[in-house]
Figure 1: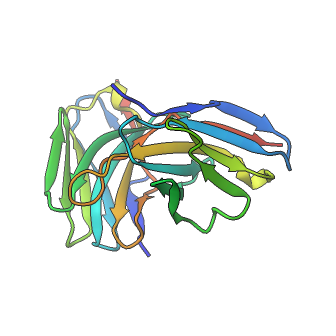
Figure 2: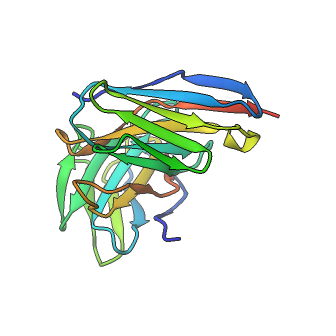
Length: 116
Length: 112
């Protein structure tokens, strides 16, 4: 069964360092997303991406964050200068449009980011 | 602003019981509602998707219902097993915001 894959599974970084989280969405999907979950809190939306541009972003997704689809398969989240509060599990998701609006979102296993 | 609430926050039942998890949302303008399962430290596994025009979906021992007008969904698990122990998340795809909004989850423990 096709799945969303994410790397790395866990990354430890020093505050102020740049981090890139990578995702390979399901191949025929057209919508791509990043969500994050701080330990013990809700899963929260960061950004959605369609047709090579951001379609929605949350207030969390400030200038420190950027997303890119550098080739036909990868979807990346870059955090330019990490802060302690960026420590979280980051989930990538993808979906096919589906009928009547949106299709089912499929999530990866997540990348745990620890900022020291 | 869409808010999603799940009750109860935690539930412990003996093996074999049927159980119901509840989800409510404040804005009925949704495209669909998804139920997910999350094991500790793991990703989100999609269990069921209900489109806004549908009333329920079934997959094996799971049945999810949707009452859009009252802003409620339930996830019914029949004949629970210890392997069902996990956190169950409800999420609505809000048509006003174009994003999937999650509840805080119900953590289920099924005791052998």
